[in-house]
Image (cartoon, rainbow, N blue to C red):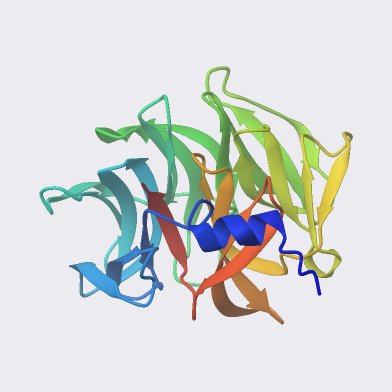
Length: 278
C-alpha cells in the first residue's frame, strides 16, 4: 500500500518548517517569562513585580516595552533589556505599541480635568490614545479620545496605524495627524498585519478569519484557525503564534504557517500578550 505524506508534514518532521526562536510572554499576572519554542513546556521567569503586567511590545531582538499596574498607582510603561536585565521606567500610560521605524510608541493615558464625567475607577478623567518618542512620553501627541473600550493598535506602515474605532476599523497617519475612513467591515476585529503580503488578518468571530489587503479587495477565508486571543507575527517564516479560543475562553497556543496553511499545537495553555524573538 502506498502512503502519501503531505509536503508540509514531511518538512516539519525533518525540522525544516517548525516553530523556533523564543516567546516572551505574560499571562496578565505579575510575571514576564521566556519560552524556547523548541522546548515549549519549559518557561523561565525573567521579570517579576508586585503589580499586574498587561501588554508587551517589541522594540528589537534584545529590548521590549511593557505596562505595569499597581494598586492605587497610575499605570506605568517600562523598558526591559534582555542582555543586562535592566528595567527603565519611561512614563505613565498603558497598552503601549512600539512603532518600528519611528522609535515611538502609541499608548493610552488617563488625563484629569476633563469636562466629561464617567463612572468607574477614573471619574472626571478622560482617556486618550497618544503617540510619543520612547525617550520622552511627556511630549505626546493626542490622537483621539477613547470613552470605553481601548482598541488594540496595529502598525501597517512606518507612518500608519490601524485600530478599531467603534465597530469599524480606521487608519491614522502619524505624519499628517489625520484619520481616514473605515478600513474594515462592521464588527471585523483586526488581529495581525502580515507584512510579507501587506494583508490584515481579521477575526469574524463565528465566521472564521479573513485575510485581505482591504475590505473591498479579494478576501481569503482561513477556516482552520478558530478564534484567537493574541497573535504574534514571525516575519522570517511568514508565520504566526496565536492562542486559540474556545467559546470565548483561552485555549492552547498554536503555530500557523501562512504559505503552507499548516497549524500545529506548540503548548498547552496560552498567554495574554507576547512577542517573538529569533
